[in-house]
Image (cartoon, rainbow, N blue to C red):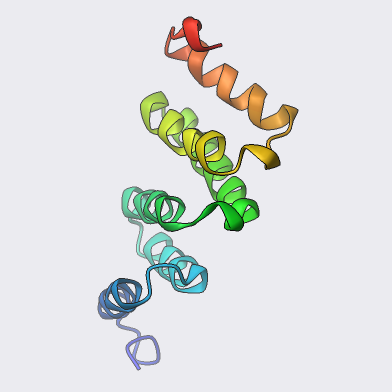
Length: 120
């Protein structure tokens, strides 16, 4: 109803409550993210996806990889390599069987940027 009336802020609030009630529903996060993006709140948009990948389990590996890589790339563009590392660590800790050379390359790039070469 909030969306139909054009009240994006209220719709975001409703989606926040829906996510609290069902924290593993990926569709809720995606819809809220689109609304946050429309509302110009890039920081909350990224933070929401970071919360999602923390909520997901190893069996959700494809989604973890999708969102972690998207977050890492966004954070790297902002020179926020610590957040990029946090996003990518989810892949390596939760779903290592899905890791490809692409994920290894992204992680290596982040670690080099952080001058954390002992982990490379």
